Image: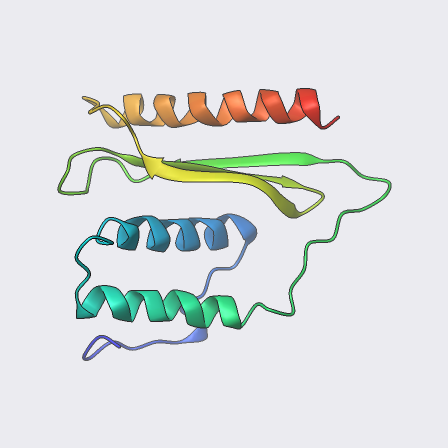
Length: 135
């Protein structure tokens, strides 16, 4: 744990979008150091594993009568040292995740608006494919 950090339940994600954002952000950030991880990276991985082990009783449940496809997308801008934005999306069918992605964008953009457009374009392509092939 970080020295001096104060943790409480009020800091926990409160909806599906926040949960997806937190997990994908943590995994994406830490995966950048796979070739030479340090102690702080390992501590972050242990937090992820603790979270995952606490969700072993959780399962995906798909309804019979509903087929609501919902998609989320988000970016972090270019706050990483490599100056590439990290963007991701998640699609849920009846509340269960069926498709997701979180990765470094392949180009360096000049504005946060452009970063959002790139992320939205990737999410829209996936959404169109899911709608076409899973309806």
